[in-house]
Image (cartoon, rainbow, N blue to C red; front, top):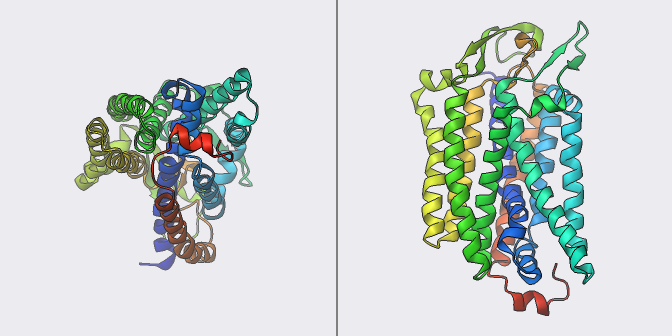
Length: 377
């Protein structure tokens, strides 16, 4: 097999790993933010929730940077078209990510309850909005985005912000938020004491049920929407662009890979397994196990989207034959080779460092702990 073809496949897998890491690690923090006003009934209880993720939330944002950087370097055409076309969405995402650190740092600086309440709602919104956008982006990718190229390969996005808020995308966004709430609830259940932990377990249990329902509805819905089929293309191992292919649109095409390769049904099965067993674990008080099962659910859900769409990365609903695929949207062989070398070093290092941080800063956070710590949030 040619080296360039192997590198394209490697970076398709690595992109999925980065998306999964982002959903798992940042989703956990966002879930805590979304739950803040519901599991914390008093100011002290909310401070306990914030300090439960206090040592980790800013470090977890490295997955957001890694994901954006990977798309920029490995799939520059996708980066340029998506970020320019969905400019309003990207700004909304960035603004929510900007105000979130301010909520952590400024919330407890003044004793005024109204001041703290405003920052609590800021944290709630800035936790929920990014996860809804994350899921809605997946939903829109499955439907195709309205972009095309002119004769000199300049991309034009012809959609609107409101068009991105279609029913299927909203369903995917709510699924993403519910899975984040489960992760946040599992985190709080393990890092806090009752009554916060009890409320977190109840919220996580409800979020798991909602996730199962929405994932099922989404799977049925995907079988009824138009998917994309690569009819004719250049050899996957050669440099190419969107002019070297023919793509057709067919109803239910996103299920074709599963029908052609039945073993792929294991991927959505992992999503269901994580959700169902995760709910059982959280109800049994096994919060750490529930967290890992929630991570497994994220792997299954994102993996399902990936294997359904393969080899497509960003289909075009305006001109399907100008869709981006794994074969035509990647950088040069040399770029991918250098990035693979750096990733082989730094991705394991990030995983090791993150694991070490969680191990060192393990244990429960109590009201007494934060009252005695003048540096607590």
